[in-house]
Image 1 (cartoon, helix red, strand yellow):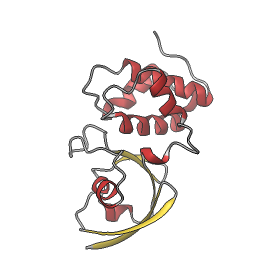
Image 2: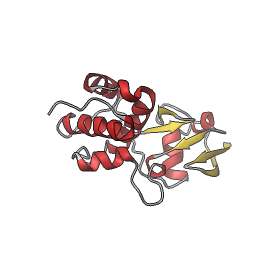
Image 3: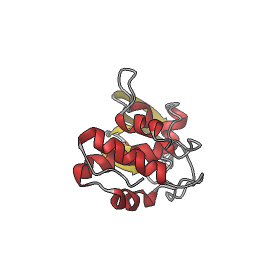
Image 4: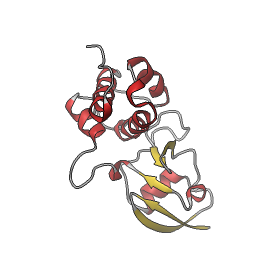
Length: 162
């Protein structure tokens, strides 16, 4: 058993878990933050993406013990003071939510993508960066539009083709 402490969404948390516990399970089961989803348990789908020390990571591929001492941000930590994060607002405005299962991972990936690429982000880059996230509903068109709109809102990028 491992006793771990980390900061999650700005709040220091501690917990005891089996050494083999994945970060996604620690977040969901020990902390009750169920916005991070377990989609495939093989790190293929991206439903479990969170930010660890500012970098997007698939939390089903990291042991909770490896995250000890880290700053973790989950989908629950993006909205501030009752206001949706610009990426969350863009997903809502551009119908990128689909059924919602993949949405937390998509949003967390998008926030990281916009942070890393800023104004250099374009549709082709968004589609390439989303290859690690799977949406099983329909397609990615509205998700891509939402990410480009959020990037524009957050700093200006070329708009997605309609």
